[in-house]
Length: 318
Image (cartoon, rainbow, N blue to C red; front, side, top):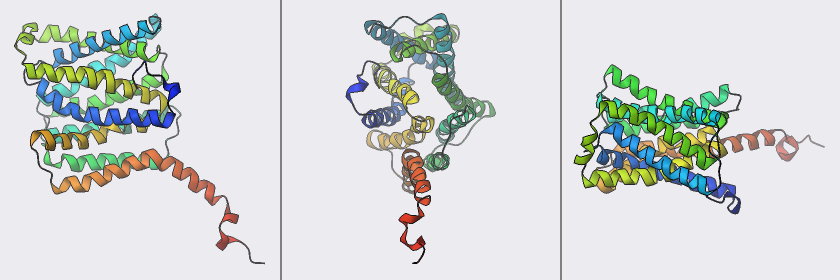
């Protein structure tokens, strides 16, 4: 949720629902926006100035709320998370696409993120219920079907970078749940500023700064959408989910976003639905149901089995 939102005034379930909808819908539409922005904008500079601007906005918000600047340890931790999520994960996807990885393979690889995140959480001592694991597998399967119309071509280096992106994102997501960070607004500011600064340093070395003068109005409009909605709104919501829900639920966006992106492509890009879509969407829906309600249903079933007196057919006869 936005860092200055009064979470005490709204029931927790409603906050989780709103945060999930923001991440699902907004990040699903960013596929389209990124494509528009990259038509005339260099990829490293696009991400670098996006997160530097977003970090500056969040720093102002955090200071306005009265938060203190991060300590040296918190700056270091924020740089770790920002380096993994903002600098590495975001840019690895762009480089993978430039090196020839197909859209279908990229969409499928990204869905491994919540499985990695659940694995790190399990190794860290958090219990991951069996229905959650099943839901994650179904989510990947559903996205694989969605991607069947995409391009599965890849170079070995492009594929390596593509698999590295969700791996880096999952490690950064897990680290943000376990290490000392400042308050939500200041943590977002520190992570985005440090990650954006890393990207800017590389961009100034590899991409001509003068290329920004040639960026079209449409690309700037798409970049603005990514800044406001993709970062300041949706990424704040995701960071809030990481701190307030399970790792699997927070990461479930990765197999919902392709479905949203597909619907956006149909609505705005003139794409057509095929038979694969109608097989994939039920799998994605089942995955969400298992992740959202599977652990509670498993607990209810276990409790019900411990109460044989409640089942008349198991009562001893008189």
